[in-house]
Image (tube, rainbow, N blue to C red; front, top):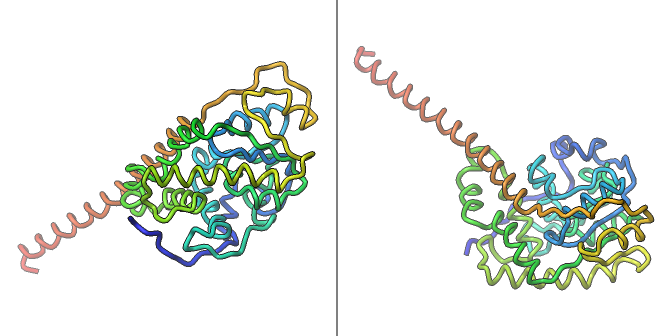
Length: 297
């Protein structure tokens, strides 16, 4: 199996990362709105439905993985850097942890975080102790079936081809950052895990996550629920009026796959253009050399 290579890393966001921290983080490391809600149900537990629900209840700029996958693929670099600071399984682990100011680089104008936030649950709870916490739960078997869609984007054949061939030519590190984050979060030993290893590590993460959050969050600041519970428990917990519309139901896996694949196609086109440029340049140079030879130069 291909082992993860070590490299020099950092936990402090670079100037480039801060400048790229839009549209959510206009202030580049300062908080422009209070962080009110951390929805820390694992990815594929209805996190996008919860994101839509929080928006409908009036919360501003609720962050979801779709933002990274569809609007800002470079956000993956930030999350991979956070993995260096937080995930001991990574050979690039630097033990620095993440501060509130660092999280504000990407979440500075967000009143809520869902989905990707669950990967960094403990750090975010410590960074934003004033925020209420929602833990959306789902049975493991159905969760695992759904998670395989996301894991395929990180470890599948297309991901491997894009990471090793396309993205180096296009000058992108999206797939490498995505894969690194998944490796660190799941505690994998390589970037080429078997399905059995993925499922085993996912079950371990699932069980530890659901045991950890109630220990970190006071009972009065924590809501444990399922997406099928509807508006009532959520609105009671957040002290909001129950909307007279159905609770949002959205399956975002297909959308995320579509957008990641679209980003990879865009990178493939960039890589092809760069390769074509050098092919044409070499052909022109070869032709000039041949012509010079025939003319006696």
